[in-house]
Image (cartoon, rainbow, N blue to C red; front, side, top):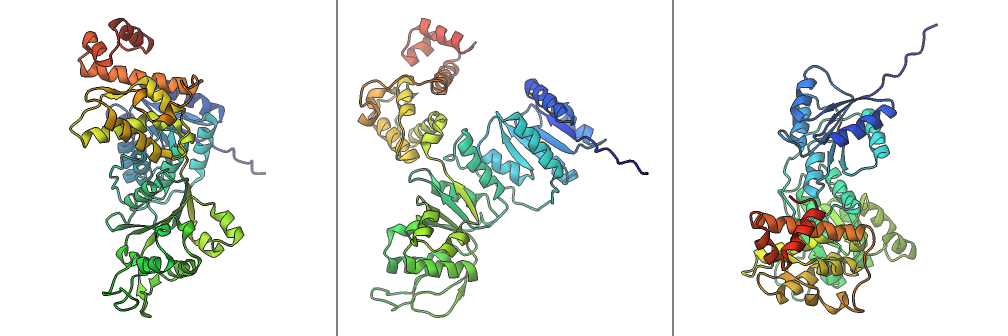
Length: 450
């Protein structure tokens, strides 16, 4: 009788300059019945690939010498069937998109759950990868920031869709940045060279919205003094973003469905069909599934729009991103002004972190813009410059756990930046930060700054 052959253990290569990451992954993969091989640099892994190949390769992005994305590009050219998992502690939209467009099987932000990482390796080994020709354009969208897991899910969704033109529904509260997500989807898509046209469907009456979407012929209604191309025609070959689609009048929902199904429109006052090639991205703050059940929104249109759904989290669900977002907004304001504001004090940042932001990122932006206008040149934004909703009720309660850690992390970055600006001179740095030299030394010791 023929003996049953044993399953060959998976051979997994790890490329990371961080010895602790290599050690943890090696141990976990061995416990999972796999055979790990670790490399400190990408060039070492490339040399080994000339002699043999693993079942799965995991690589960091930022390493001395060749980066993980450069390693991914080399593997794509020479061994496109090899699944690659990209890891990074510096997770942002550009990294996610570049990884997926470069052919990565998955993008794994650090820190990650080790059991999930091992499961991901197994899935990668079982996934048959099909090489594709894709665009490598990854223009920056600096407003899309976020290290929090909730935002990383958004970045990963954009990355996964970067080689697609499928219809997408973006769901999120007002002010969360749904249009930014739509623009990112367009910019990182095969349609990036064509137009991105945005239209808020709640801003028009039914009659005007019909004309805005589909255009009209001269004389088709009172005031139609000339022929007009609608947004679908303007977006031909590109992307049409329909914001607040949940407020679209019922009579136009039927026409939208027909356009999505038949890829053709008719201008108001004309029966001649016009073919259009448009990717539709819709957004809403409504619960459309609930609106479908109550009859406010067509069920068939909902299914047609929600081929892929992205949820943009409210700011209260990723407060750890507030320091980076606030500093980015402040930097942009300073770049557009002759006034230079040094930054945001730790006390003011504590106030910003304690707020719940019913208006989400838009509310944070408005608050930073207001404080910037009130701040003196070459000074910091302090709590007294914030609006009353951030100081009502006296001092905010002391943040617990991770919130305190975030404040300390921000303070550490401020101290490091000030020291760099003053070439390490402690006296000048203390003067700039408006603290004593002794306090500066204490902070340097606390944060391990040499």
